[in-house]
Every structure is written in structure tokens, then in C-alpha cells.
Image (cartoon, rainbow, N blue to C red):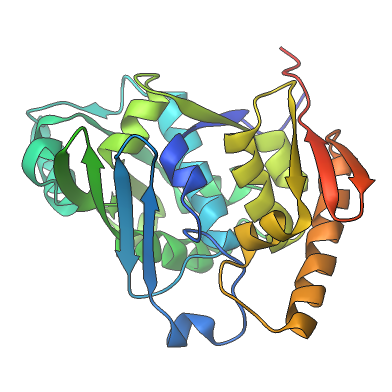
Length: 279
């Protein structure tokens, strides 16, 4: 029997597809750069993310874990239009819902930092300080969503701990994540068994992006340069780009080890197939 409780995450499609929201982070980049990402859809909708630091593969993995934890007992953790109890009121306030977003439901995760670290496959789940820093970095991210001409703003998530010494974790997810978890909109299915086996940051970023783009049991063609842009959205020199291409190829090998089909039918041109759901 598996020692893990979480099997998958129902992630918001736009959070997974937004180019550059999660990227491979180089040494010192968190101190130099800020997060400024705008994802525009063909239907006129768009979502903007901004924060004091860029987000990397470690942040992606923690957010996946939070989304999965919220889905485990979504109804019991739901904070409705009028939050009941002091904790609910504090969490909605920390989420900083504005405009129409203030009329939407949000979900709260009631868990522990150690459980979160274990479920996402951390080698040392007792390293709760690292997970806490990541949760706080995610909390600093602001989101502005424009859907059907209406704009709303909120934080990516809110963190409230009643007692830091107890390791307890209280996190509220934004309305877009909540709707995906509850199945109220299109969502991206992410297999956490696959997530736990990934080794490199490039593979983690590509995996989430490809999960949002390729349905289970389906395949699509894609070029190497496009795959590179998923993990490395900024322009680079020819020498640097060759190194990035090498990292992406290694990441594709990791996906192949998980059962994904990777076929290079021409130089730099791949057909990538995603495994069908086993259940």
C-alpha cells in the first residue's frame, strides 16, 4: 500500500499555462528579478501575476501539493460567501479578495508543513522551514484576472498559522484554484505519483505545462525551442540556448521513464504522448 494519501491535483488551467509563471531559476535570480507575467487568452480573457520574486520549480511543487490537499476534503474546507468563525474571516481577509472575487467561494487547507513536504516527495519532510518560506513566497504573489470583461484582484493564496510551534498550516486558495478543485471550470489533472518521481526542475516545469496542454491518453507535436521557452522564457545567447536545449532533452528522458511517449520524428521536432488514466 502506498504511504501517500494524495493521488492527484485538480489544478487551474490558467495557472498551469501562464508562460513564465514558473521557470528555471538561476543562482541569484530571486534577488535580481521580480515576477511580472501576463497570460492573454484568445477569447479576450487574461490573468496577471506579480510578486517581489520569480517563482521556480520548488514553488510549483508546493502549490501543486496545496491544491491536492484542498481537493482531498474540499467540502469540509470550503469557505463560503460569508465565512463562519474567526479563522474563516481572517483567511478571507488575508486573501484580499476585491470586486467580484469577494462574492466567490474559496477553499482552505488545514494540514501541516510536514505532511505537505511528505506528500510532494521532499527527501527530508522534516525540513519544514524550506516549505514555510515557499508558502510565504507564494502568498506575496498578487493576481488580477479579467474574465468576460470583468476584472478582479486577489492574492495567490493566504497563510494563517495559529501556532507556529505546532507545525499546523492553514492556507486559503484563490477563487480560480477553488473553482478548478470543485470542478466548476476546466482543470488540469496532475498525477502526483509522477510528480514525486521527477528529479530536475526543468522536468517539473515541463511536466505541469504539458499536463495542461495534452489530455490523458493523447499526443501532440511540439518543437524543441517551444519546450525550452516553457522553462526558460527569457532570451539567451546561442551558447546558453544550447545548454538549455540539453536540459530540456534530459527532462524529456525523465518523462519517458514515467511512461510518456517521446518521439523525435525530425531534428528538434517531437511528438509527445501522455499516458492514459489507469483508473
